[in-house]
Structure formats: structure tokens, C-alpha cells
Image (tube, rainbow, N blue to C red; front, side):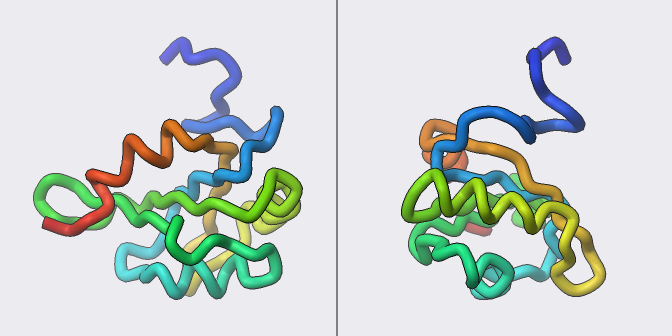
Length: 108
């Protein structure tokens, strides 16, 4: 891939921006599941994005923003915690990546 400091598809160390990318979400996961998962870290409800393939199937990835970078950093402690039977990987994201994926967040 040659993208520098990426480990298995994302950055785990570095400056926090208030945005997190999630990978490994159950395909049936809802925005409420994400909000419940991060409930102790003040996620911004309107920021939760779950991404979908062109055919409408879930990618198992999503994005969430927090009130500030400190909350996002604290939320990273949930890395490899579970939603249902799936463990969720967390990576540092940013506003640009979040914005780019808004179009992929509505099932077709």
C-alpha cells in the first residue's frame, strides 16, 4: 500500500482530531449500537456514519466524531471491544475522511 504509518488499514498512534474510524462492525449494526458502544465518551449523535457498498450491503466500517480530541483519544481504549460477537477495531480518522464517506453512508 505504501501509505506510511498504517497498520492493517489505519493509524493507531498520532494526533487525535476528534474523529474515529471503526472496522469490524456487525453488518446489522445501527447508529444506536455505535452510540451505545461509545456512550461513556460523548459521541456526537449526528456524526455516526455506517458505510455501504454500491449494492447496499454494509462494509462493516463506520465513522464517529466526539466533542473534542481528548474524548476521541479516550474512546480509543474501546479498541477490540465487542458489539455483539464482533470485535471492533478503532483507528484515528479526520474530518476530511469523515466527509468523504458521507456519500457512502446511505444504503441505496
